[in-house]
Amino acid sequence: MDLVRALLPVVVPAVAGGCRAPRLAGLAAETASDIARTFKALADPARVRLLSIIASAPDGEACICDLTEPVGLSQPTVSHHMRLLAEAGLVTREQRGRWAYFAVAPGARELVATSTDAVLGDL
Amino acid sequence: MDLVRALLPVVVPAVAGGCRAPRLAGLAAETASDIARTFKALADPARVRLLSIIASAPDGEACICDLTEPVGLSQPTVSHHMRLLAEAGLVTREQRGRWAYFAVAPGARELVATSTDAVLGDL
DNA sequence: GGATCACATCGACGTCTGTCGATGGGCCCA
DNA sequence: TGGGCCCATCGACAGACGTCGATGTGATCC
Image 1 (tube, rainbow over the protein chains, first blue to last red):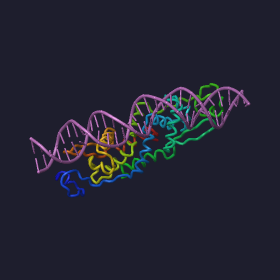
Image 2 (image 1 turned 180 degrees about the vertical axis):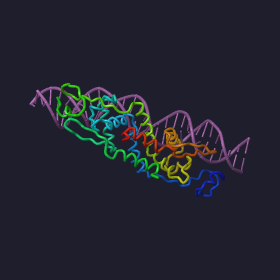
Image 3 (image 1 turned 90 degrees about the vertical axis):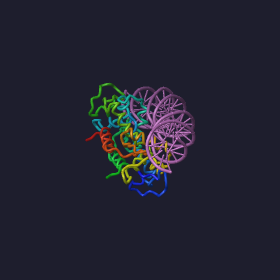
Image 4 (image 1 turned 60 degrees about the vertical axis):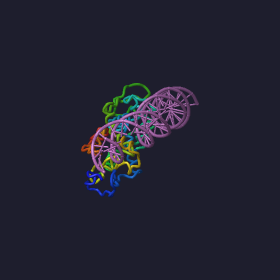
């Protein structure tokens, strides 16, 4: 039997030898996937830059053609990233004439904050 | 010339037709990569679960053998994920005897918060 | 000292993801 | 009505990523 672990203040089955996990539990698999999806949207340098550009824009919004050049990516690629950000609920998309204007979603900051709390615990 | 965009309160070169980007600027490429690296560590369901398990553990720490079963992954895979979380500065690793104990890093929550502020603006 | 245990590393494999050029669909202006 | 512009979608491709079994490395126990 292992003395070190036996002294730990957790309920451990009295089995000799080996590591007996104290049945720890965390987030459910589905919940974890939802949270990961939010962070995944922020897990790419291009999307981080795109989001920061929009957030710091004078009007708080920008269209694809405003974003292509600053990030140095092709138009389809920028469009693809914006789609992911929109699907994650981090930006909103508004079609005005030929242009598609993107703005940081109202609940974006809170979405990240609550996700963080869900993982780390909101104590 | 496009009337809609010409009325926008941004300095736009007087060029006829086409989208003339108002030279928007956001985070630097290197800064964006650093931030994305933090979020990337949280962009996987398995790592989200692992982190939440550790955060909710009675002692605030857990070893690999405590984590393998709850997430339903092999030991090498869990070890791999913990390595990534540690490299991201989200968890700390402490070797005690045969076991490696992982705990949520002291500055984990702040790391995510400051990263979020850097992207969305800390207004 | 030999057996056992916890963990890290390695090599391999399938899948996901970021990127591009080409193309198509709307909208606007002349 | 025709042409030009913005944007989304498609198909393709390289690279990154998650996962596993097998193996190596220390530390512990008998």
